Length: 362
Image (tube, rainbow, N blue to C red; front, side):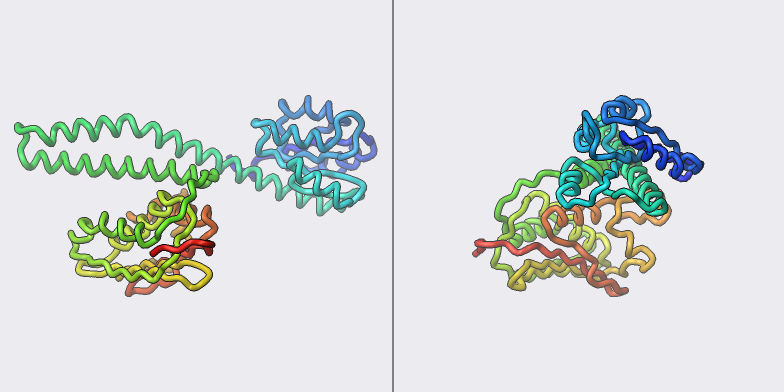
């Protein structure tokens, strides 16, 4: 679906016939709009389930069901969750605006309004609605595919493990089985990451407790040492943090693991992954540095984005969803994750955790 080929569906709600005429004059001669009108809140609520407007222009003061109640009902209707509402009033009272926003209004215009400004607002909110709908479709598709992958992958991995234990299969066949298991595990890991990212973008609830970043990093290094030793990669870790951070220890460990794991993956043989954890007095900072070849400058702006159709052709193994997940986890904690250095001698990723009060780790 292309937003440019879709006529913006507008529902104008006003009990004054003069105002309805104004809306008709503004929108009805424009081919990119489809206008419906309603003269009361009750009529509007009857029209919306069938018409499914993109944008509602909603008068506040109407007899019977007023604009505030209509707006609230729009927000409470799951089928209209992406519909944008612009409240319309003859007054520009601060209290009116606040109440409108509390009911779920997206914007506010006062009568008499400027035609060009209203057209721009309607067009902008339609684009926002369209983007939200596409994002939801993507998320639903990711969840569906990830869930559907689990059953066949469990079968593939389970039967491959049984074959691997068989005494009647030769070594060359077992190598093929190992490759099947490796590919299956990669798919399973991707589906798990995709579901986690969807949860994070939906505002996953955090289970907060005081966490020792030193303990988490030490645990990650121990977990990755075997993998790193395959290429003779070593770790250098300097801990200068005496504070704990308040956060979800499982998610924090996940974020740090993804970035440190990527540092190992992109380090050359016999290289070193350096980790520095320090306190500045008002925040905790962790630097993760590798000795790889750096990131192509053309891709720097997209490394924290989940894979999209626009960058699929440029996708490189290892980027995947890891950095997008790690950054989302940091944002949920009120912190940041950034690429602080990028050169042909390596990259440095920097985590910044917000200040934690009344906490020390010895």
